[in-house]
Length: 160
Image 1 (cartoon, helix red, strand yellow):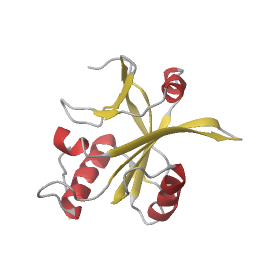
Image 2 (spheres, rainbow, N blue to C red; image 1 turned 90 degrees about the horizontal axis):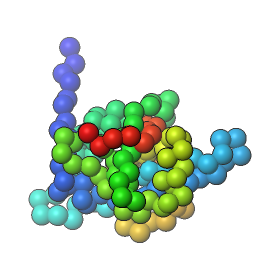
Image 3 (cartoon, helix red, strand yellow; image 1 turned 180 degrees about the horizontal axis):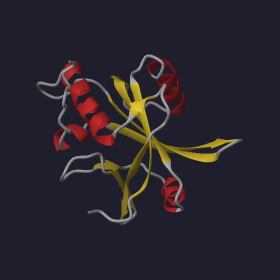
Image 4 (tube, rainbow, N blue to C red; image 1 turned 135 degrees about the horizontal axis):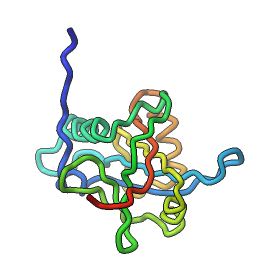
């Protein structure tokens, strides 16, 4: 019998170190697709290691019910929150959300109309300030290696 690993959902100290990016990607067949990319720059805080970072990220994967990029994109429920012109992701922690500091009005408007966003959470480190071309390269490199987890989410209509 295989033993199940239960990973805790990381708290505010860890999520404050995450790198997040949101954007709209226009496609011919699907129109605009909203993206939320989450990753980490690697060990930077005292006591942080590659292993502890990955364990925390996998705790988020578990809580968000994301699936490997190679699998069918699961619907993870309404997890995007809007308040006072700001956006956040309810990632499963009982008292903390992941603030999305660079979410554009266009991205938020797209979701406010009832459209979904694709969450992509990467386990491999990525340098801060990486642009969309670098993120696309990251997804093409790390996704097939099983190092990117994804899900589809929508706006949660209330904070509770």
